[in-house]
Every structure is written in structure tokens, then in C-alpha cells.
Image (cartoon, rainbow, N blue to C red; front, top):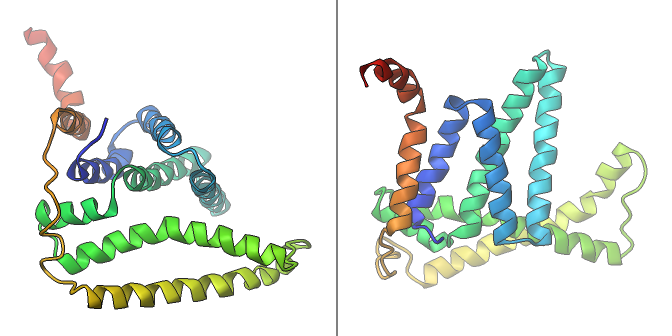
Length: 229
């Protein structure tokens, strides 16, 4: 089921709001659906590494909340919220082209071209950075890199991976800036792209978004209206 880029943006923004208004069980169901969708779309080492990294970061956030005296249920629900929100953006990136997202932001949401390009470039940078980190780590391992010892030694030895990774990112940013200048980046950048109309699946998904987004309202109103029927 292919969805419009505008639909994916609305769903992603809605998910970031749902984690604060929906019950814990519903948020957990959304998490399971996100994991199934990601593994169905792209079951690769990069995707598994991204999901694993997000899970590790979530565990660290939960541990920090427990360390500072937060209750266990509050810490777990906070970690669940953050994981669902980050996976929502990952789902959007895995199913929608970056150019389509930028065009939808400009055409549908009337965001300036410069801001839309910065946002989509930042989103595209995450998977590219993960791929570069894997390549750099393999290259340094072939040169004798070993990540052994205590925590301090491991962090110090990891500098041989971070330095070329940062230099590679800087070189890519300079190449991107030069390419934008040569291609005449401006207000008409996304004008020549084909239009992406809404389909039946988009309408169904947007209807579900409206229903879940208004959950706090109708969960109180519907039981009060039942005696009248």
C-alpha cells in the first residue's frame, strides 16, 4: 500500500502527538506495527543496526530516568514514547523518497524551500551516516583496529573511527553545497517534479489519524451519548 508523501508527514506528526494522548497499550501496539512495517519494507543490516541503536539509546534514557529517581512505570513509558516517535520518522524515510517529502513540505505545507531542503537533508544524513560508520569501521578493522579493554580504552580507540567519519561527512557537505550552486538551487527547485495526488488508501489512513487524534474527546462523549440510542 503506497501512501502519499503528505500522508506520511501527517501520520508522522500525528504519532508524535498520539504518544501523549493514547493509552500505553495503544502506544505499544503502534510500536509493534512500526517494527513489522520496517522489517517488511527493508530487512537489511543497516535497518537492523538503526533499530538496535534506537533501542540501546532508549534503554540508556530509561536507566538515566531511574537513576534520577523516576518511578519504573514512568521511565518505561517515557522510553516507549521516545522510541515510537523516532521509529515514526524512520518509517517515513524507509517508505518515501526524500524529494517527495521536500515537495510536499513546500507545496502542501507552504514551507520555504530552504527550510524544507535543510530538514530533508538532515533526515537523509542519518542513514548515510550509519552506512559510512559501517564502512569506516570495516576499513579501520582491516588496518588493525581493535575495540578491546575497559570503557576508557574503548572510547579512546574509537577515535580512529570518528576522525575519518567526521572528515567524510564534511567532504560530503562541501560536495553537496557545490552541487546545489551548480544546479541553481532556488524557489523553482521542486516545481518540475511530478504531482503526487491522493488515493483511496491516503483517505482511509487520514480518517484513522483523525479518529485516533480525537481519542480524548470521543472517549468521554461516546459513553455519555449511548443512553440516548
